[in-house]
Amino acid sequence: MKVYTYSEARQRLASLLEQSRREGQVQIRRRDGQLFVLRPASGAGSPLDVPAVTAHLRSGELAVLLQESRETGDRFWRSRWGRSMRRRAKRS
Image 1 (cartoon, one colour):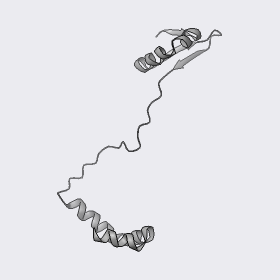
Image 2 (cartoon, rainbow, N blue to C red):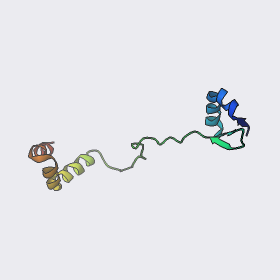
Image 3 (cartoon, one colour):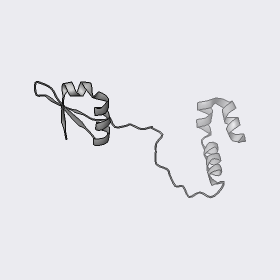
Image 4 (cartoon, rainbow, N blue to C red):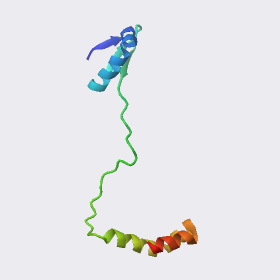
């Protein structure tokens, strides 16, 4: 891996960023001898990037499960959304 001087790094910053992306890191040495490493930051990704779940449900089973959970979770619907939301949820 090539080590760049601080002056070279200042002049070629865009190309060093690209090189660090390709190779993983770039080293920069200051005149006083201190060595620095330039690395691309790892992408955090989206919190919605989750692995899929295989449920093995037949057609219509999910709707039945949701309806049952709404009926048995009546206290949740009443306390969280009020009566009007509970009525809407039971109709669907």
